Length: 259
Length: 319
Ligand SMILES: Cc1cc2nc3c(=O)[nH]c(=O)nc-3n(C[C@H](O)[C@H](O)[C@H](O)COP(=O)(O)OP(=O)(O)OC[C@H]3O[C@@H](n4cnc5c(N)ncnc54)[C@H](O)[C@@H]3O)c2cc1C
Ligand SMILES: Nc1ncnc2c1ncn2[C@@H]1O[C@H](COP(=O)(O)O)[C@@H](O)[C@H]1O
Image (cartoon, rainbow over all chains, first blue to last red):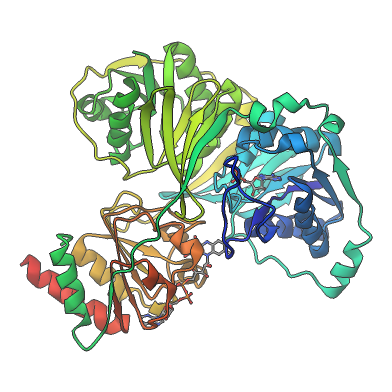
């Protein structure tokens, strides 16, 4: 089974994330990493291939540094990487990003599975997988926290507020996984050494037959017009419990008309 | 004025509060029309009329419930085609709705903005306000192509009534074979807690690793306040509380009047789900816990002492 995993390079949530002057997420002046939520997709792909056969290709769309996300996945055990990198992609919204990903998946060749994470930890939209499925005409089995593949079909469990659903589709399919699905592995020393020899291809827009006007600011159907940093919440009163902490808490709620 | 389509959130025709909120928002930018998927439209009509729906487009087709996401996107597309002049499409934020909106955006070649905190009519079109980076930033966005598709968070706008006709308009839908690719083969309904829904509740009381697995003080306080119960990921990962109650980046994003964090340290991923709450209160043993940086009021203490006392105090105040 051949699997393509879509992974994103994102600013570390623990560092000071910020926006550039053109209102895009600053990805170059901040520590970045493979989005933690995409590690679950990489892990699931590795488990599926280890249980059978085939190859895992990791795919990212992003600036030069984004190749670090691919490298991390290769260290975890993925077989090869594809990095779509082109200055014209800068400023792409989810729709434009999904177009680039769709073209790249087609160029990689028809995989049996396209795997994605639940959401990117910077944009947190959770929409690229659905857009990608729509563009590729693949059945969409997303937000699953259990997955099995057998006899040419996938089966996943998807939780909503009111129910737990079992979803089935035949391959090829697009599968999105949540952070409930597995425990991503740490790269082993052997994995780190082996990753150095693994192939990573870098593709430009023209390699994908795309035009600069279809992506970036020009090709996006949305625009951020203003970004402001919110003032930090003002720290209120914090009191030690001297045996009457609960009473004091409710006094505060009463005073604030919350009870 | 052009129509603004509002996807109705309902259970068996019982319309959720978010739909009243979205209809209220829709009136700022055009003439609201509700989109009702299901068979109990008559049960839903009075509430939709009360909040200003001029029309109610109805799609009653079992395929929408039997297959994952793609048929819902086709249903919305069918309504857009029938309606003609559509100024915007508003859907309540949820996992499934966001994905349907995403597919619709590709179909209609239209811009999509998710998780709106506010939607207003601007001089050059609709302006959408969102937050980013765990509530650290406020963004304003616009759609530059097509019909704006916007998913709106619950609890962002107080619903205002405004009686309208809610004229029922049936819409035919034939779901394509491609959209029937992912079939829902089994549905296990979850037990209802009897408490308010997490994203709609005016008050949320959450417990974390500090509960040590015993949520009874958290639930007791929540019930005294008529609140919903939330949990941190640490508590969910430990198996102490269901994932559907998780608050944070990979759980629910809540914006209640009051959020009470008990035995929760306040990691950035947790803050991402609760930082826009009006008032934040915390109980934590550790005075250095980062959650105290955000609170309006905090008690440094053991939740097993503080919460039962607070529960009693609320019960007395109420009686
Ligand atoms: C990609 C990603 C996504 C994530 N998504 C989420 C998410 O959606 N939601 C989420 O919550 N987390 C999320 N996390 C995890 C997050 O980083 C933290 O690990 C988690 O929030 C910690 O939960 P906690 O505060 O309950 O536990 P801890 O950080 O262990 O804190 C427990 C707190 O309880 C206090 N305490 C202990 N005993 C008592 C007592 N008896 N009385 C009072 N206080 C006591 C302690 O002082 C401590 O401050 C995510 C992480 C990643 C990497
Ligand atoms: N630039 C990108 N490159 C590769 N994969 C991406 C990219 N952006 C989003 N994805 C995939 O889409 C998922 C959801 O992202 P989002 O819709 O941005 O929250 C992520 O978990 C990734 O699997």
